[in-house]
Structures are given as structure tokens and as C-alpha cells.
Length: 155
Image (cartoon, rainbow, N blue to C red; front, top):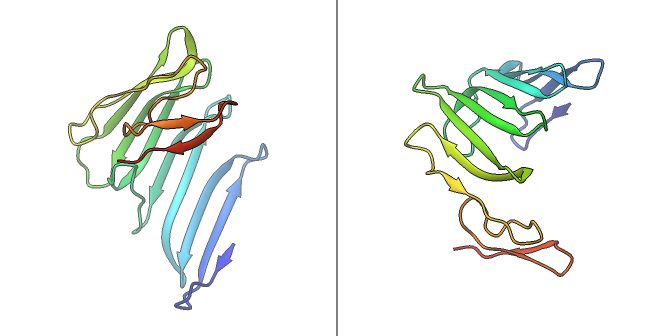
């Protein structure tokens, strides 16, 4: 893919794929200079287990921390159980742990982080129909009679 933003720099994105359609590498260059290279690894079941990045423009995680690697662990139902994020500044990694409802093994009920500068543990609650009552930030979610999300009350 080639993009030319308004400032007329030439951006080129190249991608490499496995035979099974899984992305293995993606590179972005701007005016011939590498901006970011990403590599992706998968387990035997085709689940992404690592995402590694190099280059001068690294992404931020959902909490505003620049990272260079993420490693995923799954349970037998393909739920993410653990996500380790390797931060670009070399400080301690963050390990996010995901806990699921013992009576509904695909229903996420808790998210916790190993670093104190990340959000406090989040407990998720569901109504009798299995709809999430509040998002991870505590904002109430609203559904129609068919269980479709129709709104979020923001603070």
C-alpha cells in the first residue's frame, strides 16, 4: 500500500503473509526511511502470541505507554488470559491478567495490571441477559429490547 499524505511525503507499507493468511510482517517507510517494522508470531492454533516492533515510531498501548513487544497467552477456549507488554523505555513490563466467570467461561469478569501506574483492577458485571452493565471505565451501557447496545453514558 502506498499513501501520499497532504505534505506530499511518500509512505509505503509492505506486508508479508503466511500461506494460511496470517500476517507475519508489516513495514512502514516514509520517503525511503523505515518508520516501523512489526513482526507477528502465532501458536499452532493460529492465535497471535507475539507482536514485536522496531523503528523510531513505536505505538502506545491503551494507557499511553510506548511499547516494543506484546506477548499473549490463551486458555483452551481462546480467551486471552495474560498479556505482557514490554515497554520501550526499558522500565518494568506490564502484565495484564484477564479472569473469566467460572459459570460462563467466555465472560470476562476482571482485568488487573502488574504496574501501579496502570489502572486499578476492573471488575465487570453483566445483567441477566449477559449484557455488560458498565464498560472498563465505569460508564453505564444501555441496550434495547433485543440486547443491542444503544448508548453509553459518559461522565
